[in-house]
Length: 554
Image (cartoon, rainbow, N blue to C red; front, side, top):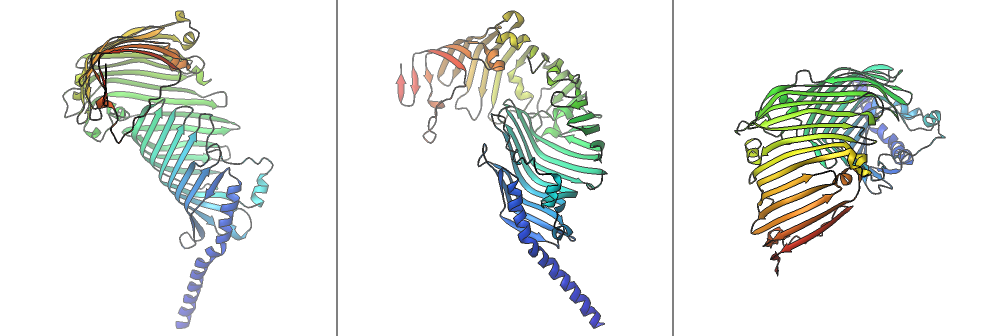
């Protein structure tokens, strides 16, 4: 009996020694593959700090862990880090290591990656790092080594991902991104399950933050048919902040085209769920927000996505009798009514129509109404808009928490209309473009901790016409300073929409202009103010006394 136990113990010891020794035998081959084969296929430098090989962790597969993996771009993004990954772990099929063919990868784990995708002003993207090699065939690839995928599981843990498009003014940040997918990827037909959690989503477009501090939780099941390249959505749950969405349909790759039939809706949504998508409302105390009202959200996309065509799509939003109020604040926002429809018949993006048929809100019975129609947004944007309303800024603190030390008061009145194609501005054909209206400010006051002095705007009138925007009767004070101004901006719409030059004049008068509270301190050197391009501005100032540092100018 002791002899049998000794033999078994010896065999187990032999297996243990083999499990420890085998990774070391293949260590040099694996490092050479990564250092040489991977880098020769990329126009970027792939490197890592250390390699961890183990059979014990994932037997009968070999676990290969790369610590401190980096991908650093070459020109035109020389020196920029595309990816920095704390740990990349892959499970290799052990038999593929001694069969001489491609290394077979069964699972992938990516821990704490920091990924930065950039598009420069010329439209070049830093992810285009794969070297073209049209002469090499698939058979050549397999016979020459490399790697093939027979995945059953992949995971991304605690990723921070950033996409910055300098040419389009787009920024997307995904912090705390976690994702897992599983399925028999070796089969031609299989069920794939994915789980995605994102702790913080931020989306900026054109300098405006449209989404901030948003959270995503999604479980999506997909029926995969690799023989026909078709992916069909099955049971799924998607939550963006408090907004619950359902999606159904399919996507299929047909040649170079992508065919689809997708629908989504928010079946049991309340108005409060929609409010969670507004950055300045979705705060840590959002759970305490009182809200009422209903809304309908639905959308669909059907057809082909090609180089010249997009699918037909429609997105509809309908809010009825909405209201919300913070429990510790006295003033609600009431009678919120919104009707929005965006659609395209399935041609080019230029056929898209965005129609905000109605937007109405009331604050202490003071109404604000707006409409917007956008057509041919690519070739020649056509706009119709109308904004009419009054707002008592002093009531804002009774609606939203403003923050400690922030003071806001005064009244704003708007009556603004715009109608026409932007080509009319470009061609100076004012007969085909009309705009008019006023924006009036009275007794406005703003104070905040970051400002050295409170700003008081006793009055200011902005008047709009197709040719210009006129500033009249501006009277303001800040600290001991006083200011009066009148001015004109010409071709403002051409500047905004057609990158044309804007011209302006501004006449200032002041009895005392004390700039000392606004200049940098001793530890903060003065910096030149860089004006935007294509701005021609004439400033005429008549100041009886100006204080700047130790200078007194009269």
